[in-house]
Amino acid sequence: MVEGWIGRAWVRAAAAEFEQGSYRYIVTTGGLTDAKGWIEPGWSYARGAADELLRLGVSQDRIIVAPAAVPESQRTYNSAVAARRVLDSLGIWPQALNVFTLGPHARRSRLVYAKVEGPGTKVRVISWVPSGEHAGPWWRSSDRAKALLTETACYVYEALLDSGREFNNRPDAASSAQHPSLKANPVKLK
Image 1 (cartoon, rainbow, N blue to C red):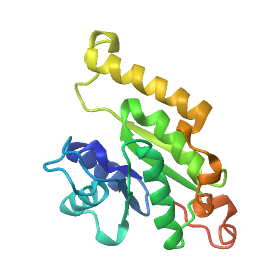
Image 2 (image 1 turned 90 degrees about the vertical axis):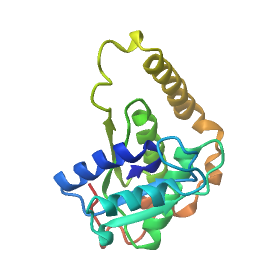
Image 3 (image 1 turned 180 degrees about the vertical axis):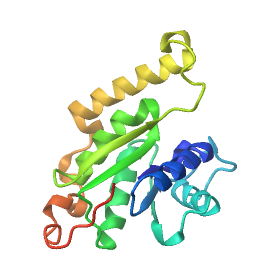
């Protein structure tokens, strides 16, 4: 899973990870852009990330686009649900998957995707940080300190309160562990 909102440079890093790893598919997620990290607002982060992957030489038959109709809040959750729905529609129920995202957001993304996927899928995260970003301790950078504190608070909120979501709003198909075909014909995504 590649969270498309991370931007073009980060998608390039995700493409390199995809090519180096033994991945079967790469799933791009996200709602509509706000221009941060991309050129213009109003188009799908998932589609933009997929287009960038194609431009970088990733084969089209290995890219799965999972656009989300995302409101201003719960973007990660809505992206995870969109990805699960697209994979369900394709008959793909992974035993394991990796979420490629930006450093401080990684723990929360892993938690959210694990909740959506359910206990039948092992969810790991690749926490990517741009080179040069670790120049010195985090507390000497106001941007890094703010990101760390914000993401820590959001992680706690997600862990304790599900970001205000109620589980009965969770899509029936969201848990791969509940799908009858999982044991008969599993597809491994790394």
